[in-house]
Length: 434
Image (cartoon, helix red, strand yellow):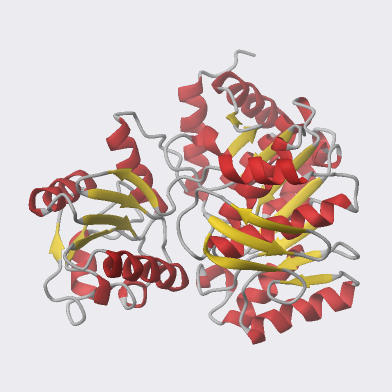
């Protein structure tokens, strides 16, 4: 059998997205059984939550790598290239390996299994990590937790960073319902780290943990992070304490993600993965997580942030308020594009008081709202909103009227962020983007 080219492989994976999202573990378990259960060959840290799980995973992986471990990192979605999702020691999976593994998985899946895009990709990551002989893998949950394809693992420790309203069609319309789905990654006797959660959803997760005998470690209870930003902070944990830690990730909210990552690192020590203080410091100093308060241009400052739900918008609004206070004469332009299943009014509510100009646009995806659709939905709360047909047009328009001291912030969708990041880099965009 001839292996497909990488381009053809990506097109095949893109085609799987047309089947939508099917939550459940039967297919992924059957697929992994047919390739020898690669996810059971290495220890795993499993990280879920509405927001912050990607940053937490990146910091956790960076510290483990700095300690000398061979680390697999699985995250989603990607910004530009599909291969961003699957990394070993920071390096993306090679194109040739993607093609070969997809061909192999297609062979074992046919004729009776029909994996979704995410199931296929998850199995690919597990197999690649096995072939690379990783010593630990850090997994970000894709959607929810209970029926997410990553939830076939038996991890060393888990984390749930935040609970907010998102993907309600799949996870439920209340915080407690979403917390119940997220709590599905909590396993018997496996310790769980909880980030900044409201009392009621925290209670839902703690009830699940109590039922299965999983120890719970909570932010601002068993572990703490003190400071005004991740650039200089102090961590006080269950046993470890670190002064003057520094990570380059922007935003005060990264303190919570950093604390969750460090709590996970502490728990791995009890299970044989030791990360010395020097590795903690080095890993955090060199961590990178693109598309979140990501500065990609100056004079004017251009920032990309993949916030796409109300909780993330509130965090972004806090950052913009701090930015404005430090530069009272500067103006802020907001470029927004969102998917049709999101809630633009609720998303923009905390952001509108911080911005001087709003430009609505559309990422190049069928499920994205057009700028005109967004303007209609926002006609009461943002009557002066402008519409640009493409993200490139929106950015060009914002730059034409911006002074060197101004800020242009692009947000509302990681798909939009990826599209503009590819534009600014002058590179092509992978069609597989969900």
